[in-house]
Length: 378
Image (cartoon, rainbow, N blue to C red; front, side, top):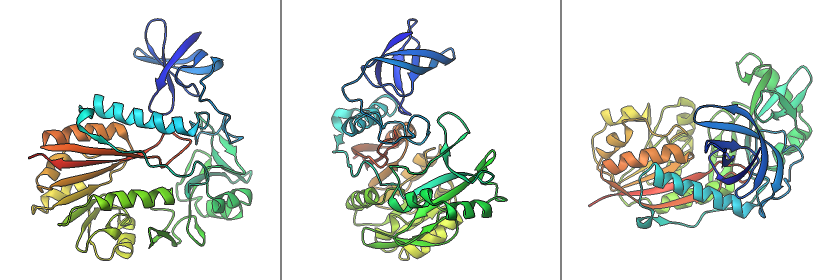
């Protein structure tokens, strides 16, 4: 069966149409390509297909840099030149904001996308380990089978060294055998490369970000692209007002460390909050769900920074945040779908989107970070 690919969509798949106009998603296909496909799954609303042959290739198609690319499930856009990756992500983000966030893009400042290196940027990862065969790697695309990997081009040198000489990873896997960390027969090993050493669990390491030393371990969330994180922090703090600040979903204190003394940081994960007290000692930390925070505090605040997980904000959070009468909300998002949903709710609460900025944290993949600045409408 032969189809034309209309565009790239969430997840990095190419989207085309079958003869009956049903949407079909084709991993590995690019916009404007003519491809031959075979259907592997079909529902009433859409189909999933395998890319059998490229009849007419995109001018932006390139040879993947990774020899494992056709099998590994980690990256999904290495076959697209980097400038087009960035362009496609911005188009996807803006399309979500317009369609699902109900935003009028003509009234919003779309700032220039922030980019950095294409490869060798990632310093946090989860390895999968087969202890019986002493193999280390990642899961194959679309399966739970392990593909052994000796070098990953998106990882920093310190982690690639460990892949090539996996003694420490295997040791960590043995320690994790009874901690229920893994997929099926494989053991999952979190790894984080600090400035001077790597950690595979609770051991603390330090990393300097924007001239500030952070203490973390591999078990807590910390952005996995240090260079881009510095640029994200610079942008966020440059948009914070002079008055009081709340940092919600504050994690290990990534933003609070640079915000004014007395910033209120709210984080439900106790391990993250422990590190936050070290990394952002001038903030006032509170442990608990953000959605319950409004029941405890009713005073006003000038700026609210929110950096939620991929699931976005809990249903009642936009309404709760509006009760603080903040002049500005800075929304940091890793998921344009939930971001768009939440922005529509903020609009109902009297906030207008001033600007949107994309940060290409994860080149060679469809993942992205973005920051939206919202101001309370007069």
